[in-house]
Length: 473
Image (cartoon, one colour):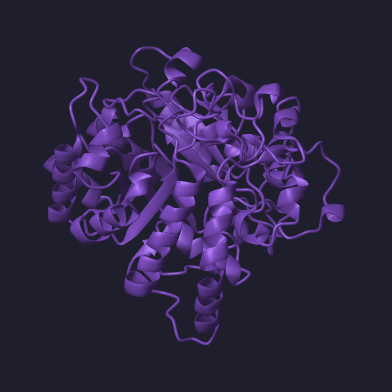
C-alpha cells in the first residue's frame, strides 16, 4: 500500500497551508541559518527522546498562534494481505515486527486511535487513512465501528473524511454500498493493462488479479463510490508510459492518478532506511545503480532511474496536450504548484517531512509509512498522545533531516525547489564526489524537470493570468 490519494476535486488545489498539504515543518522556507541547531540526520533522530514541543498542546487563546495539523496512516490489519505482489514494501513487517499470523486492531486500540487523533488536531477537516497490508481484511463490520466512533468523538464544526487504499479484491456490492453511503474515497491499486498489472500483482496462489480489480472498479462505478487509482511504476511497466497512462485515464476512467516509483534496496526487509552500510552505497552512474545488475543496490523489480524519467516525460506531455484540467496527476500537479512558488502537494517533493506518521494494529506509531522499522518507533498510542509524538523533538529532527542531509550536488541543482531530494528512503547513492544522500532516482528526475521546465513555466504563467482554472467541480 502507498500514501493516501488526494481528496481534492480542484485542479492545482493550492488553498491549504504547507503543513496541511505536504507535511512540511514549521520551518519551511527559512534559510539554514534560521533553523535551530539539531543533529540533521534522520538516523541520528532515532537517538533523541520523544519529548513533546510546546506546540503539541492546543492553543486555547481567542486567536490561536498555531494549529496542530498532521496525518496518520492506520494499518488495522498490520502487514496481512491477500496478495503477494513481487515489489511489496510491507509484507515483510510480519516477520520484522514479529506480528501474529493474523494481526487485528482490537476495539480498545481502535477507539483510542480515533478519539486521540481527533483530539490532537485543530483544523476544520480531519482525514483518516486506512491502509495496510490490505485493510479490507478487517471486514465491513470493523469500518462500521470506525464510522460510529468518529461520530461519537466528532467535534462540532469539524468535518471527518475517510480514505481507504485497497487492492480491490474483496470489494463487492455490500462493501460499495457502505463506502458510497459514508463518502469514503477509495484508492485502488492497478499498474496498467492486464499484462503489465499481472506481471507483479498476484494472489498468494500465484494467480493473476487483473480481472478481480476491474470487477471492483465496475462495482464502485455502479454504486457511485469516489475512487482514484495508484500505479506502482516498476522495472517492467515503466517502459510503456502511454499504454499505462491511457489505460488508467481512458479505459478505467480515472480522473486522479498517483504514480509511485518502485524503489527498494536489496536489504530493505532487514535494514531500516539510513542504516545502510556506507561501504555498500554505490556512486552515481556506476553499474550497481541499475536494477538487474548482480550487485545492484536495488531489487530487480525496482524501476530504472532513467526509465522513470522517460516515463514522466512521455506521460507529462500526454497530460499537457490532452488532459490538463480534467485529469489530476499527483507528480505533475505538484510540479506546477511548486513552479508557482506554492507548497508541495506531496511529501516526496516537499522541503521537509515528519507530519505523516503511521500507526500499526497494536497502537505502535512510527515516523513514516516507509519507516515502519523498530528504529523509527515513536511510542504507543496507549502510552502517549499522537500530538505529543508527532509534534516532538525527535520527529522534528526526523523531518528536518529531509533537507539538512542533502548533498552539495542537490543544493546546487537548478531544480532543487521542485524536488528537494525526493523521498529520503530512496537516497541510496553517493555523488561522484563521494558524498552520501543522493537519490536513486536523481538522473531520471533531473531529465524530467529539464524537459518539463519550459512547459511548467508556461502553465504557471497561464494560471497567474487566470487563463487556466484553479478548480474543477
